[in-house]
Image (cartoon, rainbow, N blue to C red; front, top):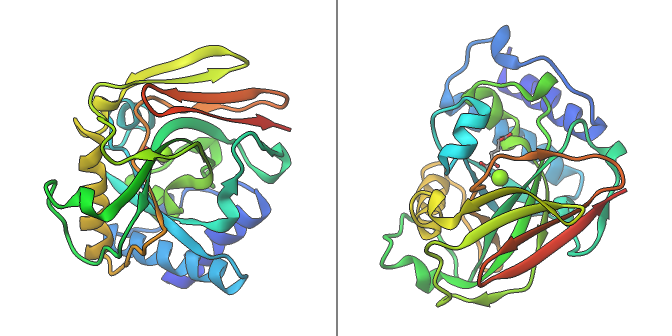
Length: 253
Ligand code: OOG
Ligand code: MG
């Protein structure tokens, strides 16, 4: 099957919120093919008027790798259609089996079109915010191989971003929690993200550059979850708190 055919299957599944069988069960494809499928599926979204607003890192913590049974970092693309206002709501009928996870979001200050060192990275970032990512694998039972999930744009579906703080806010050893109906359901540390969330921004610059994706001023970079993700149910109030950065929340309608 060719890359565009697979991209269409995954894009249609996302668009219609219908799960499909894992591609890798019937077709062999490698990491480069997977990223080519992701790019082709995003081109279908752009053709419908969606705009790229940044990139997200995935599996940057052991907690996430273990939950999903994969072994390497991945990156995906975020579009404006995925944005949910802080305090806003999402309606479950637009999703297959959504899960939420607490994250740290970085706002890009100037164009990133090459690999950057940990010493350089801060100069490229304007601000940092607490965030929640909503992921919704297009695969049945939320099960996939590394190639499958990359092709599926790393399950990207939604993001909620809280208030911005300055880039000098220390990001080491911050407590990160996810609350559902005011009860803490996941707890982690910012150190779980590659030892230092800034390392995730370095990785985003390197991987985006490797695959020819420029990151623009004003784009977001999501650093990846420090805790496992949690399934959402109708009526829930979901919030994340990140020490020093504050809270962010949404409701499940
Ligand atoms: C893939 C996306 C992983 C993260 O923060 O690690 C991710 C998934 O778990 O479905 O977004
Ligand atoms: Mg994530």
